Length: 134
Image (spheres, rainbow, N blue to C red):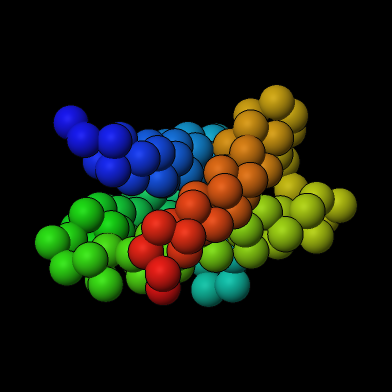
């Protein structure tokens, strides 16, 4: 493995950390009834909301995995940067909703998965922009 490929492995590894933290958060989100805070899902009954919330993640994650590992470098990098932006905005949204009466998230899982994901997303975005000249 050349030093160039080792250098470009870091952004990939950090992006996989972003995805892992996002997925861990979504697992916790089921236990914390996050759909009750989401427009469009908040009005659904508990079991139906949970079902729609969980099942909606299947096509979302399939598309995310496909696009973030696509053979087209442009599509792959744009998807990864979009995920980085999403986890950062997502952390801000969680911070803003933390006082809501239906907000059930707690440290340390919230801190690690949501805010750690945002930090990892920021680091990944900076590295990706530096190496890809997007």
